[in-house]
Length: 636
View (cartoon, one colour):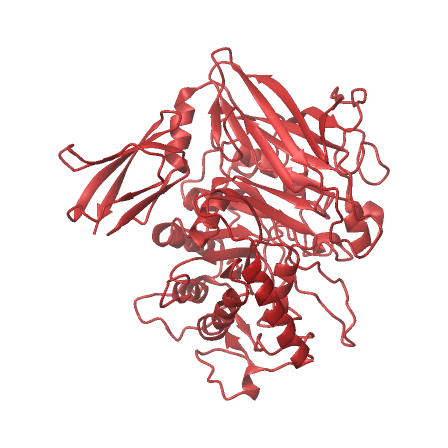
């Protein structure tokens, strides 16, 4: 078995070396998964097995993201694929820290000394893929979140994950170590409540603003509070609090959850805590927060918040004592994918892409290309209408004509039935409490806790067959077929004066009014209507969701949005400044006297500052649509 394993990995290495490399400077949508597990925590397979499967199922990038806290196994040599299980106490490895139980090792140690070492190994095995060391945070006062922090882990000569491990030590709810392994500089808050969760994302916003993310995982799985294993759920007031505190870090959620092959799809069910799951179950595989038109996600978008939808596998592959699979998960990329637009296949480009909102999610490879524009804007951006308040939405997508990864049933080439255009009205942000309640309960207004809006609706539908209007008055219009699975459609919208709206898409292979699947308006029904879920059932029920594009008649909104989206990094810098979040047309740098010290008329998204004297400057960026953004920078 070991010999076969070596041959397999050698062959994969050769295939990776022969693969098509990412063209530097030519952006494209890349597929990723940032939530998966190995035997370093509660997964069933080795790090190597999970890396090989992520590659096998066509991902461009992925993150290893085990739970925080204390765990007992060595993930490189433990797993069903090897038929072995090695716990730390059976080795001569020194376990550090205190307040541990059994043979556990704190996650901060396994990250810095073992897990990341394996990640470095598999970066060499799959050199044309991007592999990130991340971790799944046990969020104080809440449940789980996929968490990533680039830090120094891609340093050319001395990579490390000290920053990530420090964050886990300081803020994970299940890390009870107080041995100060990172020195006395850092004071650890041992009270695990909502206040500490806000403290955690604020720390990232202040220290790792453009290189980290905290994305609630399966956010509907508990309602708040649950009282189960000290885990509480996520309500909209908590998401608002944390997005307010860290808009560049806490910018989305996995409301298209993993565990899609589980008997309770997404592992959502009424038995979770005193309040059960938020929405009790999934709806076409999506959580209630995003699947419900006018639900929690739409309430956030209707405030103009940049809060995006993602999907991940959350792959554990849970097994019975006899080794048989029980509630088995899909492997990363096997069933769900998040497509994210990135300028390059490097860590910073991936984080920038995730933060930008230019992403969409899909199950079962129902589509593998999506061009969604309003004017020249893409997902996550804002665009102004013409002088008459009009704008045109264009959609072009591709329904693959080749088999997907369904080995569980016969439905291997799914056919897209239709897609919807969903519109919401954007107002102002709801006023937050003066002080964030540490308990996550007291002090919130009814408006701040409201998790629905009545101003979001499906406004158009395009499909393979024209059909009369549904009960809400929306007909299905025949899309334009370009052949080979490509479909195209356009729709014009008109906005009033000083009005802002957003538009997002959803599509499925399920026709309207399909018993136990969709209602007469095409909304997904509770998956519990289909009985116990299986992998075959999941592959029969496929959806895609896009992130929104914002449209406005108010030019003030354009400038506000551009300034908020543009990122300048690193700052301070001693050589180059990079610009993301806008199409650059011209860049100028002024000293504190207002004198131009450097000018670059180019679409380059970087500028050399190595020849400038140390000190503070103003960088002024003119975008392709002639918006002006000014920010302070420091030359070291």
